[in-house]
Length: 128
Image 1 (cartoon, rainbow, N blue to C red):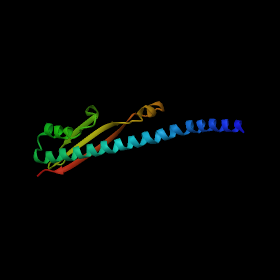
Image 2: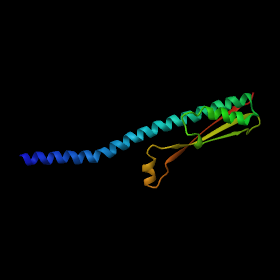
Image 3: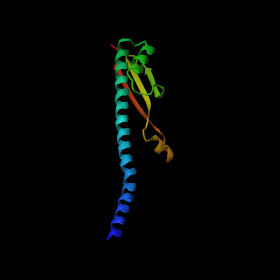
């Protein structure tokens, strides 16, 4: 009977070793999704506020870009790209592209993927 109990303890250890990587991936994936939602919400808001500034100051491209970048606090500034354009003559468009780093990027790199995900947001408003 004591031999049976010893084998049960070993079985628990094996089951634990098989389940831990799956649970760890679920937790890390949840963190990645939360980070991506935060990043997209941030760049979307920054593009909208940059376009609102551009409605008042349509010729101040540097000011629009600065206003947009000021609202991206918490993101890696080197991974941001802001483009300001005036496509219709009476509209202003602000596009923000952000290469969001993934928390699980090292695992994705190991299987041949990329460690970042490109997020894009744009806002177009009429110049008054």
